[in-house]
Image (cartoon, rainbow, N blue to C red; front, top):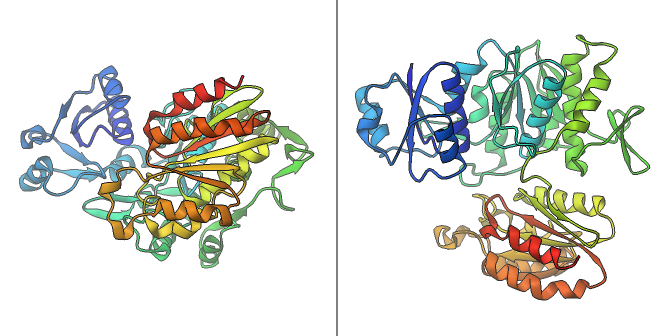
Length: 465
């Protein structure tokens, strides 16, 4: 089949293109400004693509896959519709080509999706299951966010974001869940959801798709999820939390245990221990019947060998006096949990938090108050102005200067404003000497490039050696 992907330059669409090619299809696509790493990958995979959109690009194709960022008015979309060509959204295509007949584990929730998806896949693969994989990230050991898999299971990150211009339902509603993992539920994606009830509606629909012979795993610490689960009648449900009486994972003398089995994961922090907790529960459900006497040991070994995910607790530099950590945190809950995690892991270090409001939600004022409480535990906090300031209407824009004024009172941290990442670096260099004789940890949080300041942060830390 000749398949054309409009918007092939995105990580997810590019990965899907490769999976389709490996499945025997003739694949090509188009996008504007296709950049590394995906441009390099498409060339490596010998997948042809056009830069720019032209109607003639889609002529003669058997199927068009339309990316989430593509809208009406796109020449290829208009030709596709005018010519009556077959088309699917990316999630629908994944479902059609790779999820039929599989036992699908859909990992959903506001936080922890990528890490938990990768971890479940890794545990199952290390224990001989050979599951498929589709997730929006890359492991720290270089393992990509996709795998065709030869087994009967498929692990997929279930994003609540909308599907395509012609389908405004959440992506995860296309994924045929046998097992659903619901990690958390907070308001997010303010660009498409008016309030949390709109997100809850999508999660209720996901819950309703899980069959009677499947199972729903939900974080019992979420009031919204607990309320939803009360209405489930036809599917088994299992709540999870870590370090409670009925938890698999416990914290004993500064170490992590699963029963009597000590675990040594690279992941750390309460939020990641919840991710590990539910991964153990899901994988135990699958593996205990295959290897009743040895499945626990196999799961524990896989957890300890898991490399983690790039841009999640990425330690860019570490010496006896300084540590630099990069993290993807951008939601106020994620920012708070990430600071708490590094403070607990690197005890005795002064925490310097750097934050770039960049995501569609974080650059809006919907979390103006919440962010003022997110930096508790940070000794020094430097916030940049929001990314692409002029593209965000003033009436909905996060007021970073006003936020900085609230941080001292609400987060008990020294607050500093920087107009951009470069000014942040300059101000940071001037302020670091106040920590002379003390260990420091620089925590940079952004869901984007943060102006490319990471080498500069490492250099500042290196000077303290």
